[in-house]
Image (tube, rainbow, N blue to C red; front, top):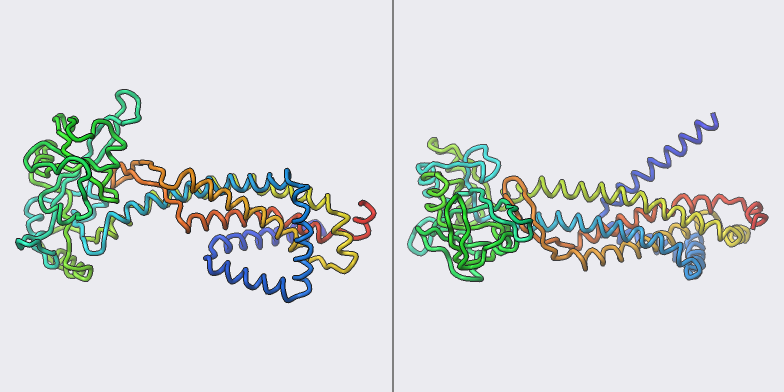
Length: 441
């Protein structure tokens, strides 16, 4: 019966700790600020709090004598945070690149039930109807700012790949209205392609990834030689693509007059509702319309979630190792300070200040490890360029973003590891029988 009660008590404590960790990881920054203010007030205004502060100062003053053991905690947690932050920075960079590709005042129209542009096909009659829909902005000559675009996959030699190794690149065929619909596209080398000619422009991301995309070079796409006319920058996912004349792309890949999508610039974000309703109510059409902001957000969700889950799993596995390292270190620290803790208890210090002091020491070491790991991740990975292949948007080149929210998540993980690593040694220190501890010391 006693063993069962002990087991249930331990299980209850474990559940409370897990619930507390989950709550902590979900805590926003202002929640931590409020907690820190309340804790500071407790330390400053209450007798147990002042006792906890005194014990903590004593413990910190002996850190130099325990520099080796303390370094185990700091370095272990720093490694966990560095890996976790790197993974989350990858997800953040991927999501942000796609987010910048869309806006609320541009719309994308695809065939009904199509999940992505590469899966959509619109015939010429549908394109004509879409271009006349209400809500579309017009250029200086009164023409609708609607760009029928065709998406095909092509293969090119990878710049850093093995000889003969090809990668998949997205080739986008566009017309004259594309420059008004995509105003962020800026030619940084060479010139635009000429309509009707087998020429293309390459995004800076595609140029970094694939060989032979310098202006003036020729590449083979669809069994035809294309001349690279220029290189463009747009600051979004389009930088990972090649662009050419839509008619030539369609002819090369035997697509006739069909297109994958129509991207339209609207008169305003508020005009989207009227635009969408007009298309939905036209019996000649079987299409879905969405804002480009919403479309690219949906395209990023799956990959971002996968990367974040992998990061959390890897971080959790490494975190378990860091927890055991912290446990061993803090148990050894408590054992080496048995006489000191027993003396404090004998002169009137209660168990709570001792628990808080040991926890504070561990979490301060964890905080140092978290800051170190976040700094290392920022130095190594912030701005690091990577590429991936992700469903509907093809191969995408993006940069890791070690943002403030990502660093904040890393710090919370570090403190959570420190909390778990210090909790059980702290409880053991508080439960030390004073007489036995003094006798053993």
